[in-house]
Length: 89
Image (cartoon, rainbow, N blue to C red; front, side):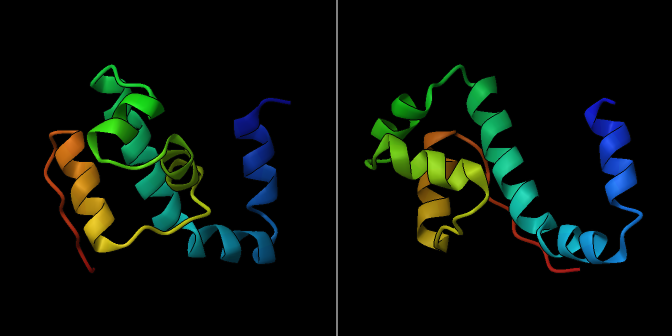
């Protein structure tokens, strides 16, 4: 069974689906940071140096288990040379 098949099976469980939906913003943020970092050809350590933090801080944000402050997100977007957009829908 591959991940997509397993995920589909898990999402049939209402409890799991609820938690997954609640964590979606964290997942999207982490995914966006990782994709932008890779697109720029940066390692976590290189990005950390650009934003004057530690590699472990970048790893925590990319894990999705740590929610960075708005000021940290601004520093990250600067280090990634991207625009920071925040939307409420």
